[in-house]
Length: 318
Length: 262
Picture (cartoon, one colour):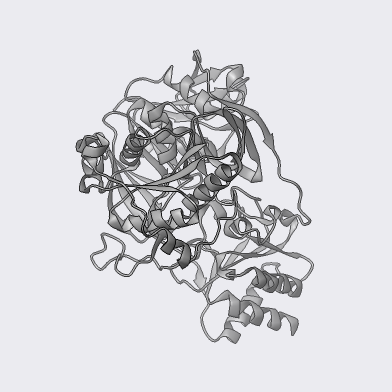
């Protein structure tokens, strides 16, 4: 197998949690040393951190890489990668931007959003993915004979503890990275009328609420629970403009850590669950096969349109 | 602006419970309700809105069998002027690279300023747009949730983590993958679909596209699905059972025990 690389994400010198997960992922299919790639401007600290996880680190350090523009980073990588390279990266918004095109340009195979790696037999890698929003899983084989780009779902593969790799950092020239896409700025969302990250209880609604008028049921339940409760939602509710984006929980929304999270009619996509960082998850869903029941602590099979009013009424009688 | 939107016919997960077949090697496909991939619907709506503002035409293309005709017509009823069907047995079981190879051949048969895809579809690779762009050496941005048309370029917003939006300037022609929520896709009624039912939709096979069948379909796929299975549930949720009153009583106890009720 050709050289295996891990493109690691970082922020102000702090490595993303996914870096250690990529190190663990690589060990599931290769004994060969894995080279981490740290890209950016002024990335000495991040490169030093990566050297604690990986036996070798490439540092691509240039002003043009200050913001991770996928077109620019792809060119910098192609100016350096060995033929037949196998590249791992996180399946985050940057990985989704970079990885497919990188696979085309390297001529390798591509597999995305991997949740488990079963191992490699020669050049054939066997991984586990999910389809249809996580309802079913699949085994997928990947022909790595001409290289591969593999994106790993953040949080899916457990990082190994305390492996001190003591890697050497090598600086790599970036080369020509002229691009037809130019980064302008990052815009932060406008603050909403509530801060769901501070709520101790979240009544969170998803597609199962069915209609905009039914949102009121969630507000009534939150009111019955008390002032420590707020109403939040999953992505489809914001897409439908039924609630403000400031109430969306998930990787593309807010990260929350309430004491109790009531997931009402929410299927439980990994993007949604990625926004919940603690607390007891109680899921109510009429579909007994909803993926949410795999990750919730407490499950109730019920139609939320009938269940929420009954719960609200019962709380009112306490 | 000449815009091509790549769409896909997929099982509608909102309308179906996706289950395994009795052999356990595929999902149960009998009686599945199919629809256009949700992300693609937003892409078509965005294309129509751009053309409404600056002029041009919207063409929708899909890789699929004759049943895929229905999603092309649905998007044409929304307002796309043209449809193209890429249909050949050799295209079956294409991986993302195969689909992008076919779409590239279709793109080269026309002259488009802008190519849109949905950010992802049922298999969740989120790959076809980025692959198509790289194959054509066009600039690309994924997860786009805002487009402003400028002179020879676009200003696009990308959805990134934490509710933030990354603003980029991107030269035309380019490929963008569209995230849900960028707009509100218009409603399509039976009447609209009836109105486009007579429009002829050109169909291309491998020969007509000039694509070597060995490079697409199962033959060309470097990534292959072996099976479907129900994921291991880990510990799974403690399911509360009983009458609604009993469930609610247990739930209230659990909420109290975890600090959710004061």
